[in-house]
Figure 1 (cartoon, one colour):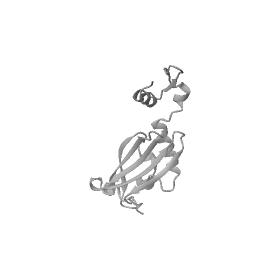
Figure 2 (cartoon, rainbow, N blue to C red):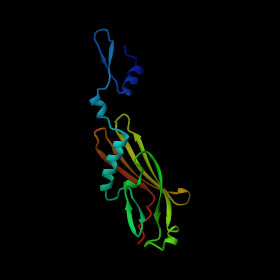
Figure 3 (cartoon, rainbow, N blue to C red):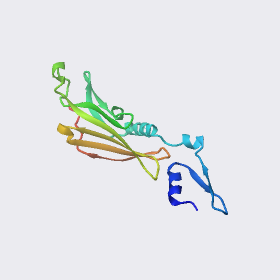
Figure 4 (tube, one colour):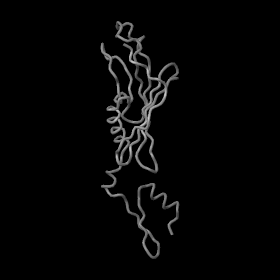
Length: 166
């Protein structure tokens, strides 16, 4: 008899027990290299989501100045692994003189969150942004990546994003 806890432990580890008849002994079949290489990694899930999000009309974005031009920063502004980065968004419109630029850029935190979707496999990837005094404003976009590598946009929620000031 296989004890349920042992069976569950083997399944969580990705090892499939094969029952033998008639004495109900089992052997352990370790994942083959082909099966291991097919598993979706966090890094690959993030890359797939960023590709889909970049093509989305209302995907993750912020607006900032790079020199004299306004650029829309899309998913590339978020980190390439789970974690946060500090950036800024512009509140002044047309670029002011350089000495006033520091008054136009306001702080924003961009966070990438990745959660495993057990038992379905794959990951949930969330692009989050916070800004304002004490980061009181928040906005996020969520995507699901299946074990089959298909990306699905789940939705976005939160406060209105800082707009592009012209």
